[in-house]
Image: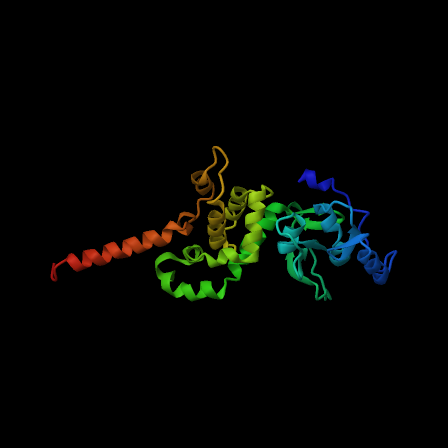
Length: 267
């Protein structure tokens, strides 16, 4: 992450109440001199970079919080616009109290040093850990359509196969952002799979790895590191989470039923 650490805080982000009031900033925006970005404004002719987007959240994140999930995805350029409510994890080991802001959702989980980077004067989760967090967030909050289908395939395929049996979860904003991070080359899905493989007791880890595999199947794999190598590097039940699990289970059920029908009674 050294390439990101060199991005210093931008001096071209203006916040209401610093040097100019919100009325003056709004007037400059109406005149075409400034454009809104995050929680502040930037010059209309400035280049919007990840550092600039991160810097626009300084007033919201402070020194104790790190931008995460869809907010981090927006900073890294995986989604076109900032989320309506920003997400953050703790950047300090101690608990935070009295953090009340309707613009922010604080996930009371400490983001370790190797999982975040200083960007534009703001802590931001790295692209890799942003990908991992997005996938875990998506599988932790399944859609109603996914839940409705669970009764039909749960006994045959298990939770990871349920996740991949329906295309609807792929429409989840977190899943779309995760796919964009992979397609941009900002985060490596194989590295994320390896990270999850070392945390087998983490809630939702199997479904998270299944979703990562599903997102990666439509992308070219790096030379010499295909999915077989990824599965070998992460030896928990990844194969059970593959989309073919549903087909295999259905085939096995059909074969068993046909065999039972052909077997004479008393045999």
